[in-house]
Length: 95
Ligand SMILES: Nc1ncnc2c1ncn2[C@@H]1O[C@H](COP(=O)(O)OP(=O)(O)OP(=O)(O)O)[C@@H](O)[C@H]1O
Ligand SMILES: [Mg+2]
Image (cartoon, rainbow, N blue to C red; front, side):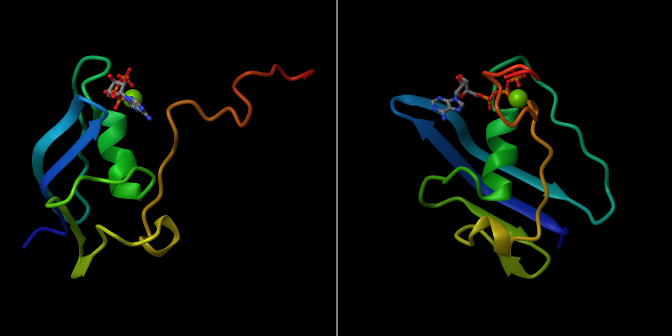
């Protein structure tokens, strides 16, 4: 069994389906890249794994032996570097 198992993960924002039954296996130590056009759902998938975005019922995320699908972000031991890491994206340094 792979270290990270993503099983039929779906995410909708209102009527827009961004993730449609995505399944993915990642081995321990494996370096993996999500490649796709802007808006295809790469960040959404990462946010779902980190627990920052709730997924639709039925999807599952397992890390090691633990089903983390419904755990709080702080209990997942998953880190994420945000695409935009400005704390206040609407302000400049002087602001
Ligand atoms: N909180 C949200 N509410 C509504 N729609 C959202 C939300 N977050 C993302 N979306 C929409 O979901 C889709 C996927 O967005 P996402 O940010 O995952 O794309 P991406 O693949 O990371 O794009 P990029 O390459 O530009 O970073 C886009 O259509 C986006 O507008
Ligand atoms: Mg992105």
